[in-house]
Length: 391
Image (cartoon, rainbow, N blue to C red; front, side):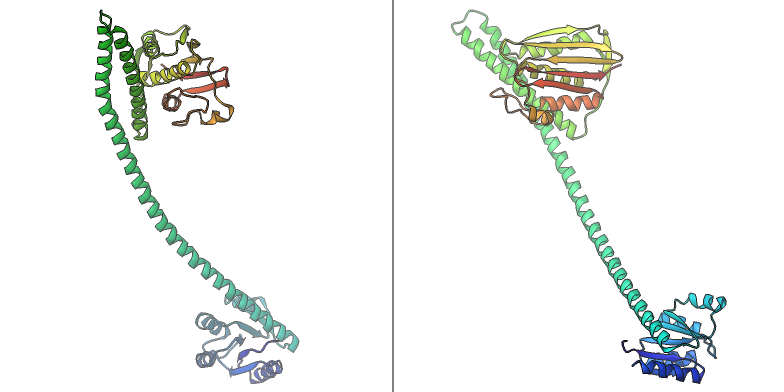
């Protein structure tokens, strides 16, 4: 049993003396005996105690319960109630003051010691718990402040990134538009050279050959700039669905003429058109990007003199397109990256390309609310199928 400094608050002198002897017998130090609540508070002002033995029924203005309330608030010392009564009314009175223990008179020494030990143990555990709670609250406050500051920094960083992306998009758009005009002029000049070469000229064959090289190079560069412009608009959130009436046959002819003009490996395009409506309502620019990129890829990665099959039909408010080649195919381990920007499979060899075509197709279909699937086998070719809602 550990030694404690004890204050006895008891207005019956005999009971106080018996309690004092019992406590001292167990090596406790009695700092004082008070016969009223007022005297008890005065003693505690002058000397600290580790536990208070409190009689409930004290004479004077402050009874044991009121005195305990003041001790709890002012000194935070554990209190053990002493009472000759254990009726429900008395117990209800003391519960609100959260006593450390309750002893019924008369008491025996063994019981008293046990009650005091439990009271001290309970008090210490409660204070430990309170300390932990306080530390936890402080940590939570500190962490909240840190998170707030981190969130402020993150917000600033995101805002800065947004500004940089906007600036990048503007630069891309402006630079790309700036290239478009001179490229158009170069293309026109190359086409004129080819017309001039049709007349009798000693260098007719060479002029025609180099004019064709210029024209093909300009078309390739123009396609790259078109792709860059496309993603510049997409990154700047300028991609919009702009539906309008369009003639299906004229649209298909425009796509095929563009593809055939750029064919360099003698690949033929076999077209199979189903029962198509004369006019549909959709975004012709986005549709053009879808079919032009899929067909140009199919032609580009086909073997020399090969064939690309292009099927298009209309069913239940959807355009159903199928582009099939018998080219190099896509490696099995690279299928998941197929629609990533700038991705080019390791088997493309020296075939030129930007790796943007299929990512453009994917983005356009997202805006059109369409779908795309593909099947491929290395060395045997690839088939793409698209399903696009139209009005």
